[in-house]
Length: 157
Image 1 (tube, helix red, strand yellow):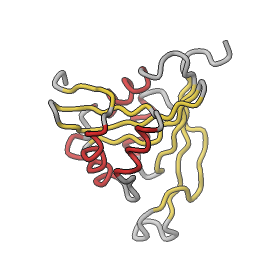
Image 2 (image 1 turned 90 degrees about the vertical axis):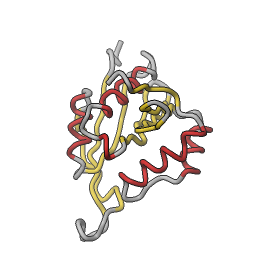
Image 3 (image 1 turned 45 degrees about the vertical axis):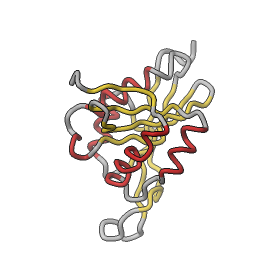
């Protein structure tokens, strides 16, 4: 996997990031939302294969915590460990001052839940009807979110 590199997302990466998001999300962010995320100072990283962006991660630091807002790998490259590499590096870049990371993930996204568990996240609860969903699979047009958290270091020190 040495051909892959992880770096800070740049404005010129947004079109590639938005294209990946379009492939993986039922209700994707727009390119403008990615630009806003960059401008807001959120921790945006990408994983590249040469010059090509093949995945991204967006973390929103809040004091000594962070929220994982979005993360995706190009569907053609999923299942190769790239998501784990990207997640681990993105979390590491938050620094030691970040002691808790929270996220929501679609309950049906078992691959992502497995990835987050591998990275040390634990389920905290369920948020009912959180995500917009395809009515062909969810009669209500909504899907539950699994709430997960990762504790780093000793938050009580």
